[in-house]
Image (cartoon, rainbow, N blue to C red; front, side, top):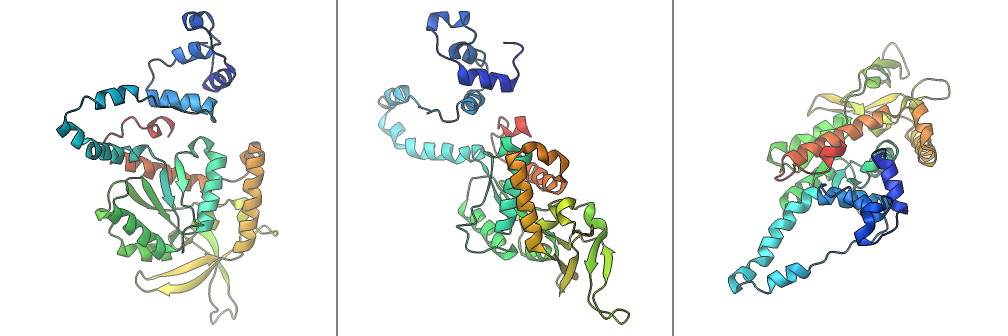
Length: 322
């Protein structure tokens, strides 16, 4: 038993069979004996481990003792049961999955796929907003949703993540992050080393009648999700990167907004990439996932900051698996 790794423990427990209660210590391969090894664990972590081994198992809560205690309550004690329970339930929001808001459906799709590839053990702790039910995308819509969640007193940990571009910087000016509750964290995609000298297309000039390509630092100006999908995805057949086209000028923050060209091709290539990685995880080791990893790590750090701001967060599983 001492030689078992966590993964082997899961395999053994999934195949274990019950033994007679008085003889379980004589049968180390029995389910009772293996559960005995968890006797000093936090009950929530022990339950999580068992459910990892038996994901389809039914969990039953025996409330016999609770019912017996409730029947002996005085009338004034019984009157506050519901309100006391409501306070406890609000506190359990810290143990619910983190909800991640993105600017659009594609961001949620690609980051969710990246989570499955890079951090599959976190897929039940981080949930991306279901954009099938979200009527609109974009910076303004996400800002309105953050405000609505804050006003409604939503207890779930929420991380709202925005593009690293001019449009996001402009849209976030109307959001006073200092007034948000600690369980709501606002972040932007991190800066990319690749983006410090990235090919861009500017408007025609007196010297050039057509758009000319020049290198520029596009961090904070044009880094949408596409820039984080990997050098292998951003590379065109001739070896050059899909360039960023400068678009509108935003006078409020005195910057241009840029968009990478060839988005449809980039999206198709990344969908094929993550399909390969999910089908055969070893393929991801030879591909560039650094940009997606940067974003997911930023989300994890923001989620931890949200837990730090909540009462009773010290024992949350995030602290064990970050």
